[in-house]
Image (cartoon, rainbow, N blue to C red):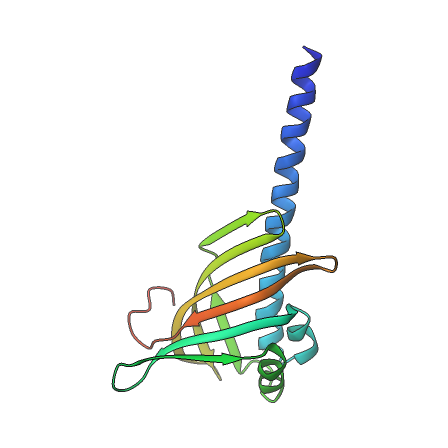
Length: 151
């Protein structure tokens, strides 16, 4: 009987740790989009690991696939030149997977620039848990103007 309580205690501890990780991952990603809305380069940069990779998948007018890469510092510098509220990305957490120090997050989004719809797509985040907490290591997104289910 006393072993049953030990098993239950260990199981509950695992569930609590998993929920804490999930909440921390969601909080970090929400901080990223708050930083964008606030044009806050310091807050935005703090969301990324030092070696983070950012990529965007777009289609050219001739329907050729283009993958653009950038660094988190360049993205933060670009966003910091915007007025507060100009860059408003609205997301929906669709899938969150966590295994130890690795998290994968899928978020459909709609992006509004100066209050007007600009484009939509999906963000795919890969996060790592460092000694300083969860950080975005890799972010790739799609962009389109049509077939936007999440708006």
